[in-house]
Image (cartoon, rainbow, N blue to C red; front, side, top):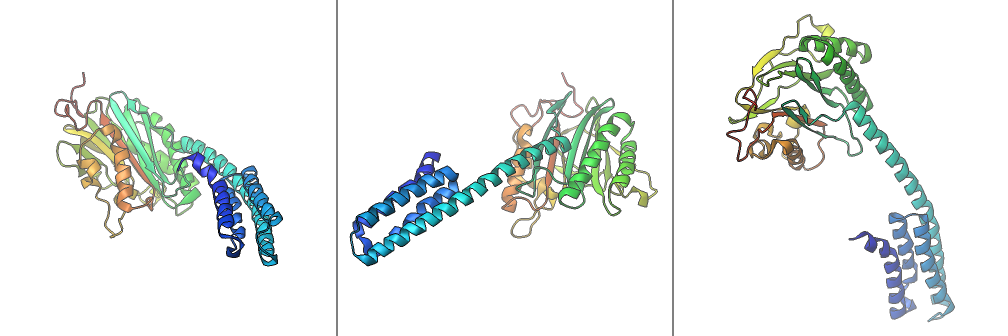
Length: 365
């Protein structure tokens, strides 16, 4: 229904009820139904709009009282209808005013949320050198734009460095944990000479900011300038999914280590693993909301075997298609936040030029 038809609906209902009253006579008690018009107007418009609809209904009620078609019983019914229309109109004006005020406040909150999202999860560049990036975020809350899942990418001297993680908990505490990690990462990624040093620095920072039982799982990656290799360091986070000519496969990031914020519980050093990227087109990083999402039958989402991953198509839109497929699989918004970050090279991706396109580790003209 077009906006014009929606705005005309209360007035059309009022006129329709009035015509029906004239056709069937006073015995059917249709006059109180004239209150439907201002009630509908209050639901879709503001105070002035509601008042206009109510005024039309009140004029019709008054005309019916002035020119009655029956005796005293009908006149009493028409009077009851007049009172009902007046009461509904007054209540509708109050309700529509309150609703408009809430909508204005919600709009302001969304502006603040958008600003917070850009501060916490700042936009990821589409390209850093020969490396391309695509990201999408699915929030478990329809009113939230950002949650405990996190990601960031930094163009450092040693190559492209990135982090994908998941803060323990829900709501504002999780957002605060994510913001604390990202703030520390954005400095450490430029200043530290290794992923292990970055993780140690962030772990120390989080230990001062998180509650005693707070933690963040995260995976760090560093892609060399020529794209031939990638270092991975997992802090309790699942390994990424490698995409290429062969069947997609999950990457084992090694034994990993404790989540960030819990490093004081172990003296074991964090040791990254080096992964050659020859033969792979793309690397998909994700949070556990993607692999732990369930459908109505209780089955987990098959990330490595889903249509978006295996069905081809352009890597530029893969994370968007994957997000839509995951939502359809669950049947509603995911129960947990989902962050998806895809790293790929210029010119890669299934398509007519797939066999000749440069891959990770290949020559770039």
